[in-house]
Image (cartoon, rainbow, N blue to C red; front, side, top):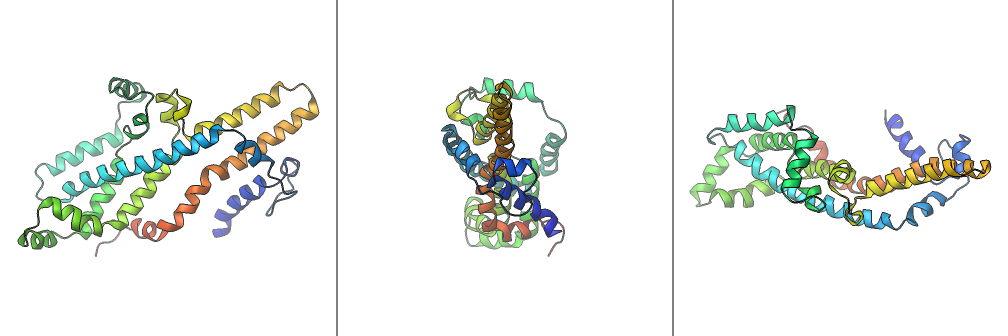
Length: 273
């Protein structure tokens, strides 16, 4: 199973460092053939890639911080058994997982809020994932006992102090898990940019990488010389692998840092105690 999962990743990395001819001829299996950095040079010469990296890092960091803050502030009250109307509020949240307003109403809402073509259009529309909130609420219910709150109140601790000084430190595991979920979502997000952004200085990395692929595909179709067209098409195929590496390398680097929390977090709700 490990080989089945690992081999496609190894192949993509090896193909990205191989020559276009070797990739098109099918000579790449495990290690790079005719080692070449041609595709990476083509990507890095595209100055908008750096703008895209800057924007995507900002959207990921700022968006994940907003997501975690709202998720925790929403999940903690819903985990309290004495919250009036807790079942109805939870039902309202769950209802949005099945039914949504749709693309046009969402666009009109963002437009009426006045955040079209701003960074807030990438941060606010997806500020809360109901699924992540439910998972977080389940974690708090199973791991933060009511007796702990009662003991804290006896010592004069308020609800706000209990949340910041006790609940948050004890919730590092679930925070790491939802941070990974939210972070991956922000890093790969491009549809909201299509809808709400027209300023290229605000585009995320995924939009610029898509433009590189489209531009090279169009260039190869417009070239009349057959040999040159074949070379351009080969570069286009090679760029697919390099773009995958460029867009996923930061996430793959960050994953080991939260892996132990992620493994523990996926068991939330499956067992109790």
